[in-house]
Image 1 (cartoon, rainbow, N blue to C red):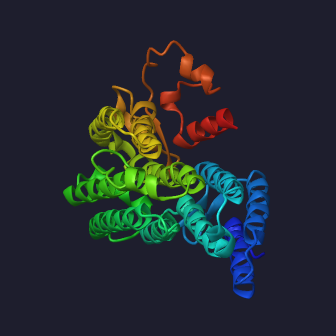
Image 2 (cartoon, rainbow, N blue to C red):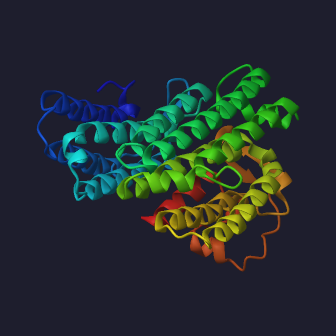
Length: 373
């Protein structure tokens, strides 16, 4: 493979698996078997094992596509969760998955391909296209069991709300492009540092669009009906992978992109997280359907993840001292300051020689990855 396409190796390989499953469905349309599922499972397991051997590399395509530690961590999560979902689907009873198994698995892996591209995107157009490639197959998969009464309603609600969120996000991207004159994420810190009001408006709109994707209150209304309508293996995957992709966008835009002005988003993210915890748990209390109960429980739990960037990255009273380090947009550190009174807990937990509040974001992500793996 050429050096130009080398950063896209995982994405190209997944595209090959999708094509193979699609051809299997085309040439065996009337044979009810699970061969498409097994081929998908073997392909995803192989890609998952390969992903753990991939090393971070330099940016490609003019900085639009990166394979940094954050991107690789996300890709491993997406591939493993996708393989687990396909494995669970193979045990599902019913004639529909036997007759239309190729359609189901092609759509699921197409959404997974969008997530892989999204994890590495450092450019607004690529980010939006990857988001849509991830989202559109999800609408189809939600209504896959069209014989059930709840499936069309859940899929339609998901589609309408997802379309609105995409429009809001794209509107925010247009503000960012108008201010910076480029679609590169690396231009956002300068616009924020200059205090451009349109840049702040753009990031607010993008935050609202991402909030739809990760289902935080008040952008959660699609979740209960979607969870109730879809199959259980797909719902399990939907509750993990697409939401993780939404958090990747938050990291890219509000930690790497916002840079030293990241503290401006702490009140908004914190308020959204607090509201989501309270509302999600209260709405879960009267539920009689197990899936709807788990949907509202998931809404409440997503708030903990939504507040993590604010707590871990922005949780210092000296936040205004952030500055770029070594001119790398992805790495941001604190100026020299007294260590926060954490009694060395975070330094020991993340195996860092310095205070965690003064280390680069990429090193924090790498430390979290070591803890999880």
